[in-house]
Length: 410
Picture 1 (cartoon, rainbow, N blue to C red):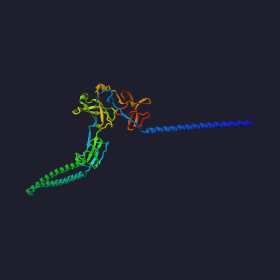
Picture 2 (spheres, one colour):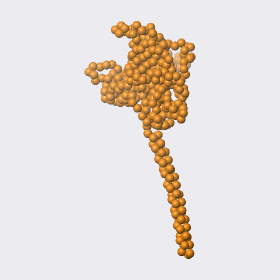
Picture 3 (cartoon, rainbow, N blue to C red):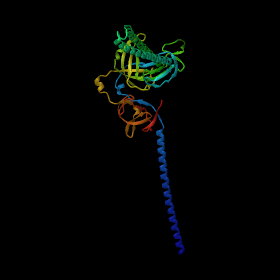
């Protein structure tokens, strides 16, 4: 009987220890699972942060207004080149040796910025000489004016004493002295004026040794190096440069096209047009006709037409080849009924969280912009929610996040 009780107690004790071990094991698995979830969350956050810090290569397109050709038919096409209305070769107004050239191709410069300097040793010496001449002339004038003042004082005193204390001859001599000194003062004033004019001329010659930008623009060519001689006139031998560099005002870019005489009647001033650069065949640039140049080229039977670029962009460069489509000219009523919004490639529109968005690029970041999509025009889509000229990602990757860094791919 006692043996049976001991066996029963031993079984109860062993059962309770097994339950305690099972409960402890369960708590340990819960702790391990929670720790694993925390680690996974940290890793996911780090991966997201790392992904946001990595630059994504994308292609960009520029939002354009509907006037770029949507709903209009091209009635004539012509080819030409991008030209700059303001382009200049910066050069010196005197012949001299370059000591500094402070420009490089592609650099933006402001009006009046120093581009280069010439050797100014001779010019500075001439300026110092002219300054010394002015000082000497001024000192001599001061001397003559002092003598004249004294002579006039003596003459007034002699006027009261003539015939009594002094003779007529002394009086006449004093009067003559006043006239002589007056003439000398007048002559010296002329000499001082001449010396000052010479000083101004010397200063101008010194200023000519500094070559400055005539207007704001971009340096497109660097034509000289320090040590070379530049001159405003061409010289033989090929050792003398006529310019330091070429400056182009990018805001003055326009298009020159040659239109066949037989189709010139289809072109009018202010007529809407659309330009396509040879370098960017998928980019439609809004434009309009500025003027028809009133002269013809008899060898080609063409007339030059100036076309303005309505949408400025850094990708448009001088001398680029371009094709211009002249569009049907719309009346005011049609213009008032023109659709509102801007045109973007249809591939730029994606769905994010049930909304249509495009990714606009500002600097190095892409931002999701909600838009309202409208009518389609070929591979373009009319949208509202962004402005004209905004750069958008052409084909946003599925994992492109709002605020992600991007780089422009080829």
